[in-house]
Length: 467
Image 1 (tube, one colour):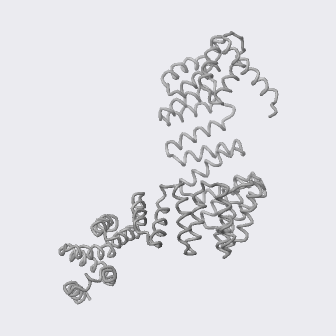
Image 2 (spheres, helix red, strand yellow; image 1 turned 180 degrees about the vertical axis):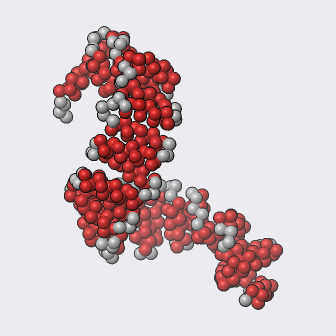
Image 3 (spheres, rainbow, N blue to C red; image 1 turned 120 degrees about the horizontal axis):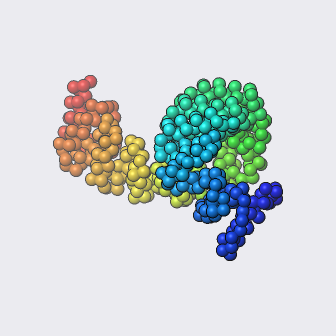
């Protein structure tokens, strides 16, 4: 790597400083050299060496304000706020118009979660600053900490007014619009911005995403096209455009855009999966599978790739292969409830009921409280002859789905089969009150219970009473 003169000087100065530390010699550095050394160590995350440089620097230049400010910065970093504040206070008397003093003072308030006080200090700094853009950005961030998104947005807008290419502020403005649920406002602002800065790929990209969110898909495509015109290597614009084309069922065009990202980046497993999905939608199953395999070849830890392959073989009813790839996805992300649900479904189709039940149980443990998951687990337990466990499963499910006739009919059948007659009839009546047309559930799952005279009579009496 080639260095410019200042970088070379910094390297030489740092090397000289480290040589001094190793030999216990004492070399003289001017205050600017110490500042460069400290800045280098802070940028490199070498805090201990930065502190040594500050200590030696102040011993040689005890009146250097900038070295003292570095010391304040370190104290703030170490959460020694009171000590930092004590050191900072007398510096205001020396240079009351030094903007950096105000910034560090505000940082102390911010770190102590006194964000309103930090804002007041930043505003004071604006009165003495020749360059206010960064200060407005800092004020905007403090308002974000306070969840005052309207005020934050206004300050980030001031940043843009002073520096039209402050893209960090632009992202924050869109973030505020999103939190304020004001997509139309974001679109209006971004359109005005692109009038002033027509070749800003970031603005066009964000505008496209807003149009996409508003379901204005053709406008979204146009915005992404302008982002691409502004920067024809902007991968994010190609990806977003391809997603919109997918939504419009224009899969060939979507594939073209995903392929462009591969040409630019060389490797993009996400794009390969999306290409595979588009081919699948076009009915070309083999090309789809090829791209899914390419995706996991490039990134073996890409669980979504293994899931696509799993679903491919599952749709072809090749359940053994589907299970093989399903296990790969679960090994990567064992906390994904949807993966365990699919795992259970495949095992159930393979008649591996113990594994299916284990999977449904894990799905529920991971927070999936869908009715179908409870029903599937309970029905598998019934097939396994685990009737008490099945009953307990359905009782738990009622806490989440208290008005489900599907649960009530199953509990009725189980209770009556387990000779808990009173509870069985109570659940049956509850189920009939919810939806008597679904009594076939009891008939299909528990035919021996359904055909009991007393049960048939209760159902008949209910229908006659409530017909």
